[in-house]
Image (cartoon, rainbow, N blue to C red; front, side):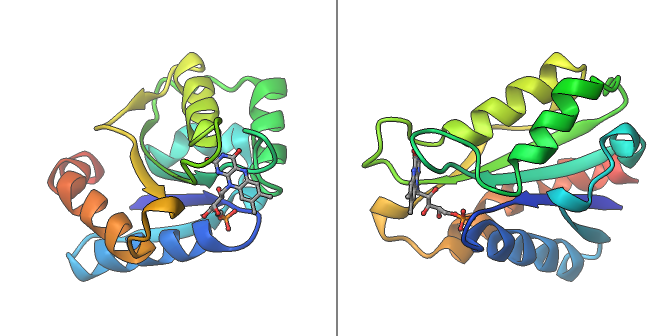
Length: 151
Ligand SMILES: Cc1cc2nc3c(=O)[nH]c(=O)nc-3n(C[C@H](O)[C@H](O)[C@H](O)COP(=O)(O)O)c2cc1C
């Protein structure tokens, strides 16, 4: 089971999460969509494997539903050494703080002991490429490895 965690302000990260989860299911693995606001961070390590998706808002800040997840992680500081995660960020390169959100969340997950799988995927709204395509192309690259880890 791969948990697909998303945090968002205006819904794009949720769409990316849905596309990624659907691709995983179509490929024969199981995936569970989890909004970050519903995630109990003290049970996160039990997930074993997660894909973490968030946008960036404001001036390099976390979007509305990622901020409480981040704050809980920073406060509770669960031991995440049993967690492996892959990261996908949404942003817009016309901002100086392009893609800061996913970098901030990934850094905290690693600090708490989680191990990142693969390179952080990115969708840049300024490039005009379809979000769904960029998200699915990214997860396709890592699915064999994620599938092995989920087994
Ligand atoms: C008011 C506003 C501020 C934003 N600030 C940033 C930013 O600082 N850095 C960045 O990379 N993208 C920024 N973006 C772009 C969003 O991250 C991008 O539109 C993303 O697709 C939104 O995803 P979401 O709907 O999941 O929140 C901003 C967008 C808006 C509307």
